Length: 207
Image 1 (tube, rainbow, N blue to C red):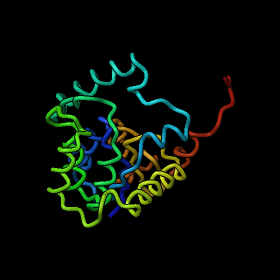
Image 2: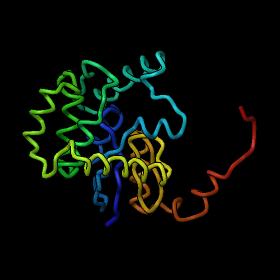
Image 3: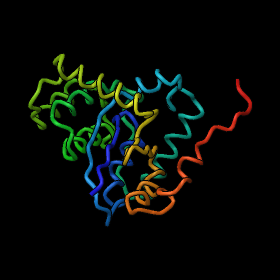
Image 4: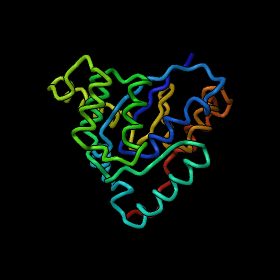
């Protein structure tokens, strides 16, 4: 059985879609998932990137794309009332409740099903009551855990969400699920030199 680490932030619609698709995409594989909430904004800041919603034409495309993908895969998706929203309360709640699949499902669907305000305090309070976290989501311990998880993700080379890690290899994005499946099934390409060779630096134009 392979260990799969799933780095995620509910602010990302692609993380939500990947979460919903994961069981079907990996059907027949032997694996166990560890769900790792991280602050996507922290990844962006570290790598000097902007999020898709911060570039207006890219934002337009992103939301058209995710709605098309959702209907293609039969996944319910409704854009939150505001986006981007502050995901910190949801990330901390997921960590405090122990981020298993049930908890992550509740947090993801809170954001992407129903079209409500994902950051609404009353809605988050109701979700907190439903999940009954063992730890206080607003505690220093949980806040430190989220910072540590984000720092760990950066140290491992995670630059976006969703990212899946298997055997030290990173697979980024919803469209990487077939590649992740191939790795779990032991496709020979992953055992030879191709993986490392494909990423060898080829100096070119710099800006």
